[in-house]
Image 1 (spheres, rainbow, N blue to C red):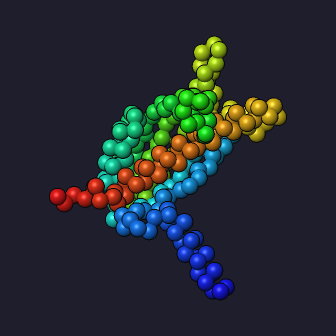
Image 2: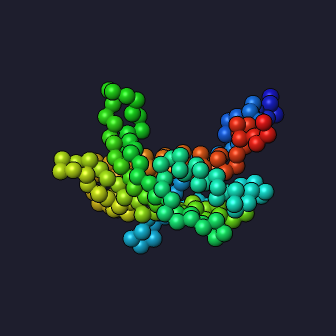
Image 3: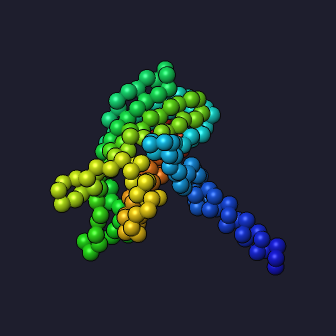
Length: 199
């Protein structure tokens, strides 16, 4: 009986580790389920390295990243394929309320503007998300705060309400980044059958 329970636990752990899908041959494990902020002096940013199939070259990563980001409302400010680097910027309208379900909930909207730098090598790439500015609605228009300022409010000697609002804002943006970078990883890997070049 103990062996059966141990086997069941191992099977469950394996399924969970590979994204919960064993029925789809084309499913891939998502690269991250969390993203961590780095604070360096007065700068706060996010950075993550993604390993891909070793056969995926810089030119392929560059092209697929450019196509994906263009579809997600990003503007390319710099790009040089031979260097393996591109810099993109975007402004996204997001929602700080994680439980927002429609008309009866407070949407708690905000806009975030940021840059993402993608450095590419054969078989891997690194995303750096920086220059992050939040625009929060207020009675006098939009209030601008940098990620570092929001971080200081979350970790400082502020009121509980201020700390909670700062934490909700950071968590909301991190949920967005996880979704964005996981979708980009899927696009770069091109494992889905829809991308099969033979037709």
